Image 1 (cartoon, one colour):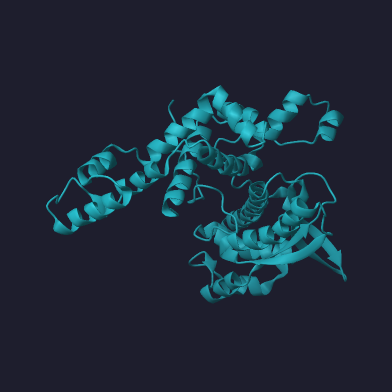
Image 2 (cartoon, rainbow, N blue to C red; image 1 turned 120 degrees about the vertical axis):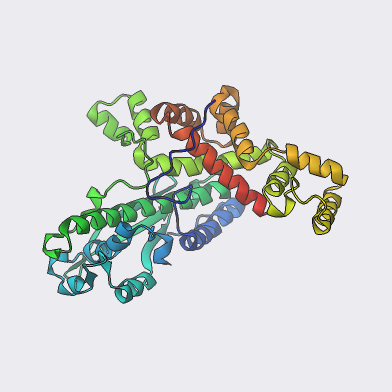
Length: 385
């Protein structure tokens, strides 16, 4: 099977779509308390509502100049709901020569965290959601973003973690899409703020949807009935939704890494050897008489319980992280029996259709993304050993 790895995203340097670790820890810890209590006693805590302050650089891809420029307009135009063309101070802070904001103004803004509302509740169906919109109050309008999580609907703490991460990735999509669109508008306006208008949340530019987009959008069962959409088409739209591609990828990877561990598809020793294989200190093909290097080899081989020569030979023959990722990904992407077992153990029957659908809908992208992201997960796992 040819697994393509060259389809890197235009704006994303990380493998998987970014999410705020600060927000993840706080939200998961709050939701986990209720989940653990429910598992022990069967009692459900009352609805809890709060807020999380997220560092700006944990949401936005600030290394992209258009996104960086657009973050400020996202704040004033959407979170403060102000008419951008009527804010003279903004134009004063714009440096026309460098096509960006004055450094002091930009740096001050970056220091201000993004406020995310959080709702932990069991009052509705599903696992979680991310919503954005405008809220009226005291004669003003302000933008809001709220993450809702229903801890009692989850089958495991791992699934709860995945839900929180999944919804935070949607926040990343929404805000970076807005910022990117504003940044592009600024370029076209050539610094003329009279041409800048607020972009509604509903018209957000696609971001974090991969390259091989499908144009599909999911609909609920009720919407499908109203629109005369058959069940097969509804499922196709659900699995192929562009905005769910990155989050689907992360969900499957989390479950697949757990599947690998349960079924011992990759041993701890293989991860250790793959890590050592790339170590500059273990470049066995040169300076073999180096005393310090020989001592290092002897010490490492003792820890693993091997003779030094056997140890060196095994590392040379050991598969790399990429080879391990290709080997295991091939099992779940090509072997129907393994795919079904993976879905069953993950308690996600949709994974069978999801994998088959994404291989058809994104034939040049999905397999390559899955392998590359799995490789990076394995590298992190080896680092944590």
